[in-house]
Amino acid sequence: MSFFVPPLTVQGVASTSVTADMLVVFALILLALVLFATEWLPIDVTAILVMVLLMILEPWTQITPREGISGFASPATITVLAMLILSTGINRTGIVQRLGQKMAAFAGTNRPKQLAATIGITGPVSGFINNTPVVAILVPVIADLAHEGKTSPSKLLMPLSFASMLGGTLTVIGTSTNILASDIAARLGAESPELGLQAFEMFEFTKLGVVVFVVGALYLMTVGVRLLPERVPVEDDLVEEYALQEYLADIVVPANSSLIGQTVGEALGDDELDIDVLQLIRYGERFSEPLARKEIHENDTLRVRTNRGTLERIMNAEGVTFLGGPQSESDLHEDDEEPVLVEVVIPSGSFLVGETLASSTFRQRYDANVLAFRSRGEVVRDRFEDIRIRVGDTLLVQAPPDSLTRLVQNEDFIVAHEFDNVNYRSEKIPFAVAIIAGVVALPALNVLPIVVSALAGVVAMIGTGVLKPNELYKSVEWNVIFLLAGVIPLGTALQQTGAASLIGEAVASTATFLPAIGVLWVFYIATGLLTSVISNNASVVLMIPVAASAAQSIGANAFAFVLAVTFAASTAFMTPVGYQTNLFVYGPGGYTFSDFLRVGAPLQLLLSVVTVLGIAFFWGVRV
Image (cartoon, rainbow, N blue to C red; front, top):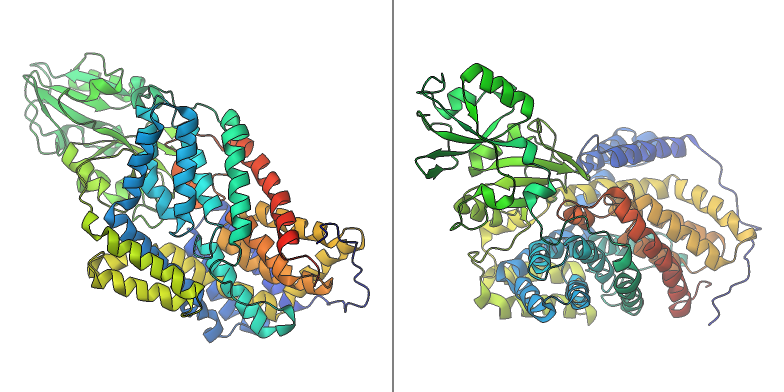
């Protein structure tokens, strides 16, 4: 089969005229792109807003109320919902953590082995479990592996995220993007049988996924590892990493201080002061949160987080004496305690997303103090109580061991440190593995559709005790579900108004000077760039109808174009916001925005060539 296809002409293809309906849909798409890229609203809220506008503007968008809410009943939405629950079931058994621990034992302090083990475990697992929870589970495992193996976490955490994306291309259930693309392909095939499209089979593109995974893994282990910086020192000290030395202080309360007799909350609880009392030390005994009702006595030492300006105000007004402050992480807790300073990453679906630390009452809920706040690579050390929290933001938290245990066991947080006292249902591992095997095998053998198989797997996990009934709703990332339900009608509007055909014909015009495989590559690159700034699911909704229309215009294989868009949306490496798993490692890895561009852009360009050539080899570009 030849890779080099001669240019295809588009003569004879009817030209689609621009209509008012198309302009309205284009305006809604532009609005969605701006809101997705700027995150002025949470992405799921943006999706619902677009869905509502599509229905309100029905005379132009041609989206009826029934079609507008059809995304909630879409097989893609229901399948993703079920797969999220199944992934939680796997998580509850601790099997992925066990694999991670075996990986750490295998790798030791050998850096190439550490990287190989990270990629080798993450990739294959991500092919069968939604890759987002896989990364959430493995972030603390890999962070501890790096610490114990004398390696900077920066060298392993980005490869962890990238490997999960590469592994997600192995099967149709590897990512929500694949599932959504399959559903869109099935709908387009039903509406236009001449396209020859249908829902993806379980292992339909596995052979291409294996090629992409192997090439990507080799890149990460040879070129990528050299491009990765060591942002976090090997001997990581969180106080030094976050440069907190100037923001931590010990102050002693002398006999003449006006603070004596007041509670901590009364004396220093004023939000205007921007001060947190981390510990109260009295005659060698240390008291941690909750401290608000603790009465201050003479000669008490208060360990506080504040800036130097606020500290001077308190010293002048309250008569306290500055004793210096902690200069390292070990100074923050007693020698016989477990580490009480950890990074906490905010995942998608956390109740904190869209909230502030003040409005969420985080400190009161968890008896925990936030010492610093890292968002999109920027570290904030003071006055962060009113900053709105986004997915992927990292909190540097100090708390007693029992409070940290509560954080670890709460799915609203990813604690970047492994704890031994987490209770897993390890006795349920055989049931969980068998259920996942059944969920994969039944659609692969054409016994059941994927959506039915996945839902049956959920029922089986409840029946076997892998999951408890009250854990079902907590397992679902509802923002992902609402995002899918909201953007699916946008793809329908593109198709029904002819907007997809218009764009498809415009792109197809490049076939007068490009071979069909070149047009295919253009779609891959365009989808990758789009996914770098908006949701990957939104990208496939927008691009697949256009790609299918362009393929039809130039007489090319529509499946090849759909597959190129799907793979491009599933492997967005260039920015931390391009894929949710990148946000999970952004903070713990200490990365900057440019780090993702430096490592991810060459990989994305390499895979654009590998994927397009692979599609041409396995399925052909022309009909």
